[in-house]
Image (cartoon, rainbow, N blue to C red):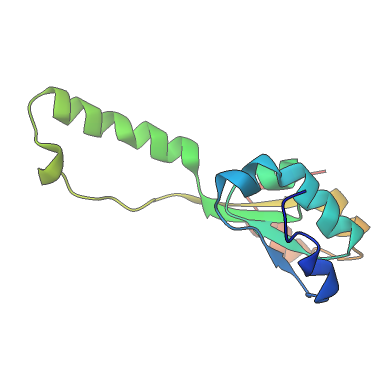
Length: 122
């Protein structure tokens, strides 16, 4: 477990937001397990986090972002200067909820929320 991981249990946090870091990404399963053990709702921007046992993810749809990169490469290969291309923000976001984790935490996910979810992990 990464150094300082025990701080979340000592401080009695009420929820956990997993930041974007290669270290946090690598330890996503252990972080999800810690959050469940300490009964902390958890969120990340990566959809693989609820797949690893975290409660939810809300963030850009990375496959859609990667597909749009193809047009950038096409323009560069055709002679466009990368510095002249506009910066684009993600256009598609997704909400993923792990209902098994919600149940383990004693959280009820309402039908209204489930209707807005892009993907449910059970």
